Length: 97
Image (cartoon, rainbow, N blue to C red; front, side, top):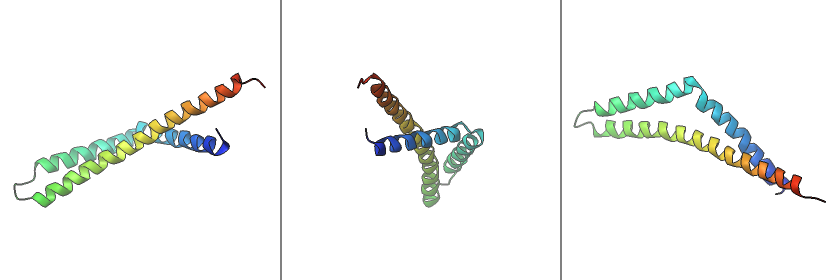
C-alpha cells in the first residue's frame, strides 16, 4: 500500500467519523423523521386529481431517504477503510527486516 492509498483511507476514516456524528445527532435524526412523516402524510392526503403534487411529494420523501442513506454509506465506507489500515499496519508489524 502506497502513501496515496494510505492517505485516501485515512480521509475515508475521517469522513466516516463525521458521518457517524451526524447520524448520532438527535436533531438531524428528528429532522429526517419529521420530513419523512410530513411528506408521507401529505402524500396520502392528496386528492385523486393531484397527480403532480403526489409525484413531487414522493420525490421529496425519497430524497430525504437518499440523503440519509448516503451519510450511512460514508460511515460504512470508513469502517472498511479503518479495517484495511489496521490490516496493513499489522502486516508491517509482522514483517521482519
